[in-house]
Image 1: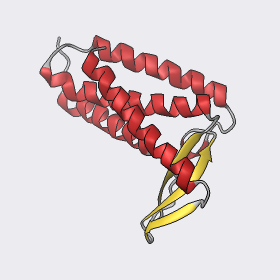
Image 2: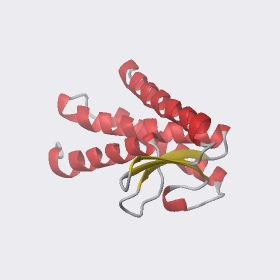
Image 3: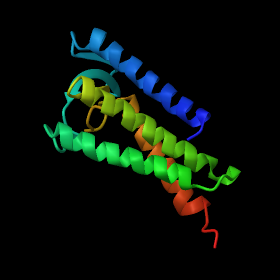
Amino acid sequence: MGLWAAGLVGVLVVLDQLTKVFALQYLKPVGNITIFPHVLDLTFVENRGVAFGLFSGQRWFILFVTAVICIGLIWYWKSLPQKKAYKPLRISLLLILGGAISNILDRLFRGYVVDYLEVTFIDWPVFNLADIFVVVGTILMAIMVLFVLKDET
């Protein structure tokens, strides 16, 4: 993995961790702050599972699976052709990797993932910036694989 790629992952991790420090210092004591009524709240949650609370309390299993996924992402990133057409796919993998690593750090050092963003106009779990990186990266990857890139045979 090149320096630019490692740098991008590092920036994503730092951005996410800074927002989580803010949530721990200022949001945890109050629990909830409404930003836009009926649209967006900041709500402190200690997430001990994964999406939708699945595998709650399975910290080491989640860490293991996430580490395997990270290794797979790095392997896939390295296996891609060095062509300009693959750059969006590479960026998508780095977004997913940055989000995954940041949430791994939470699980390792806190025992839970800090979640704080809550959309209130729908019934949706509270999430964080790392989750956004993973979702955006996954959507971009799906678009690239399904609709843009073609097999080179």
